[in-house]
Length: 429
Image: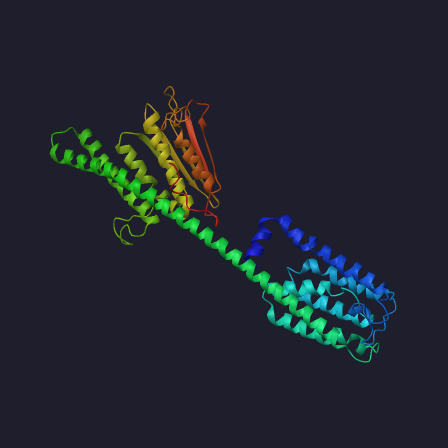
């Protein structure tokens, strides 16, 4: 429950300032103004029918008006001034308001709502679970406040009415605060339950989408893999280049099937046993050399240069960086007539830079020329997906033509994951 209060304060700083100061204003008015007015009032009729705080004794003699001195006013104000700090130091504020309230009762004969600040301090401490300190403060108040006049010689003994009023005030304060606390806790629990239900529904939907994707795409990939394998088995007389292409198709489709199973397994643990040989880790930058080799086997003229340790990058940054390289190489295959590209991966202490560019020289040869005009999926989803992957980890991505006539994709990603990040490796590629 207190965590809910802290979360609310963090989300809305204006609300925090209001709860610290704004809610103290009515208490200050009640305590200071109300007590000043009550002190200047001489009480009701002499027959004792006035309010209890205006009668000196059960006999009905009314109090004379009291002029509050500087010390009494200072004690009234000090109790209110401490209240804005009640969230950070609830027990200290409780101790200060208890001391100022008792001090006021000992300085002058107490009248009026001089306990307003102490009421808020007790409620605040109880609301935050400080049961024992509240019981201790309530016990001290119950003993001292009704007997203040007796302790200072202003009255011979405390009245039963005064003792009863003090006990009723303390009991009502604690009881009402407990009711509010229970209500707030129930509301917070209901909010958490709704959030958990929303997360469960979102998880179920992600699993359903992943399962549908796996079932549809995996079927086609399996057929491709099977047919490529059959062609290799029966086509002994095929040209070497054709056999190499079929081998690359078979291996690429098998790798795609493994990755599909891995992605589905992230969302649904029943897809294979942990540690199974079919469940390879989600690809990261350490798989870039393999990606480049497969692209070369497919006939793409591609070069790779690596600076730094590819294995030092982890988490979603590692995966998204690999996917950016993969999508860029795919764009080379789709949109660069000469199928030439260069890949540069630089791993620094705080930043990972991925640069994929084509070799200038061929007309309109670039990685994304048609992507931005509807060439990739007829909607530019390739570059959009790469940019989403970069921004998901707090990085940036630029894609555009170079002065030499080529096209470059440059991604800068921070090393390491942010704690608040959610794995978005399933973003639109």
